[in-house]
Image (cartoon, rainbow, N blue to C red):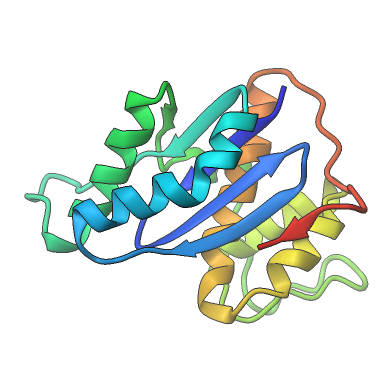
Length: 176
């Protein structure tokens, strides 16, 4: 039942549920180094997961540029291992955008560095009871938070699509 979700890129977000691991890998900008680094660092999580999902990448009709080569290579490597891609539009289905000045939930504070889409994911996970893992995302450096949050949201989204009940409030969860 363990599910590993990956947000591909040079700042690769990952989340393993229900084990409660969430974090970001900082990978080299060269394609080969990024794929090797990802495989080396994620190996224990890949071996312990039964399901693997990865956020797809859209170039929206343009030719892939230099910045899109690493994410595309990472997606290819994960698909070769049996991973399933989820279109980037999953975010719209999972949670609506939330404006910066949202005050609808008493006690809710968004961390810095999140755009309206990421605040929507944060709110959805908060309401679903995933506060311990959200606290670990908050503890990450500001520029890493969106990547870890996307991976955590993707893990939750994929578990819901598969009809699996996953508790998000594990006390022993950790951010890496």
